[in-house]
Length: 80
Image (cartoon, rainbow, N blue to C red; front, top):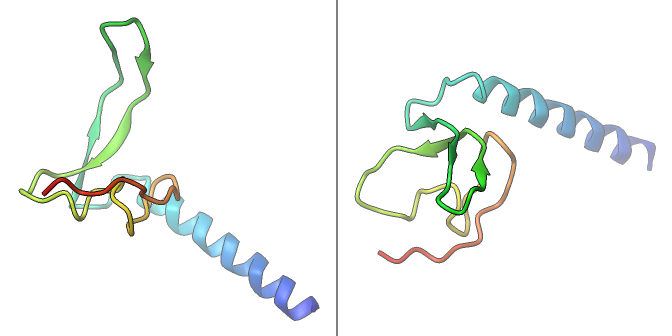
């Protein structure tokens, strides 16, 4: 049981380090979006987005994909 816990802790550490590395802007398939204020007054924090390429299947928010910057799993169905 201790080995499983140790392995899990090492994987989490490696994942966090990898996400931090990617967060430095090293992904050529994405770009930064500056923060902005919506028309209803809500402020949207700056974020990373995939580059436009004619498909939604590789976007971070599409189901089956994981955002390397936040670790969030996509949940949206692609429209095209």
